[in-house]
Length: 180
Image 1: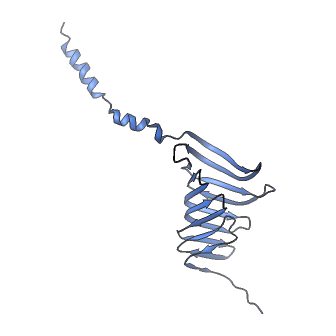
Image 2: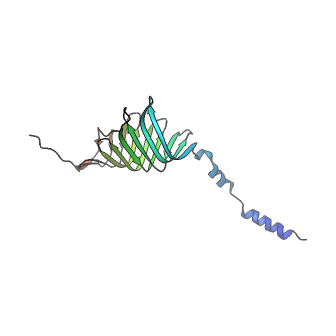
Image 3: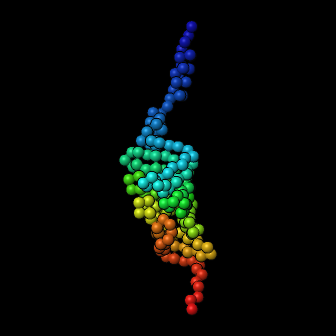
């Protein structure tokens, strides 16, 4: 029996199935993988056993390397709460990332912040400092309150409840009352 054709066929098949180990290592590199990941999650941020923020997200990834951050690649919905537990505002976006050691959020892609009075802030990029309870951006923003619309074309900053808004390069439509 001549086994040469079978051996050649086996070696040819083996060569065709050869896998590039660099590609496997790139895919399996644990440094690029989250330490914790979940879908359809709810998280609560508390202070002295009091609920401050509730976060709902379709996808959550936590990275614990030297970067130490949480990522919300499919967006999130946040409610902020006062001491009685009542909702004082909401925030939503299509992407967010929180750097843990700074307690700083980068929120982007269709960002909408609404406070308890119904003021609505819209932008494409917003930074939120949870410790200072301060939000800011260098991007254009739009703040709507009833029939009033203010646009900041070169940035914005405010407390997270939108009570002290500061606009840069303002334009908009305001209704002013006549004072006697």
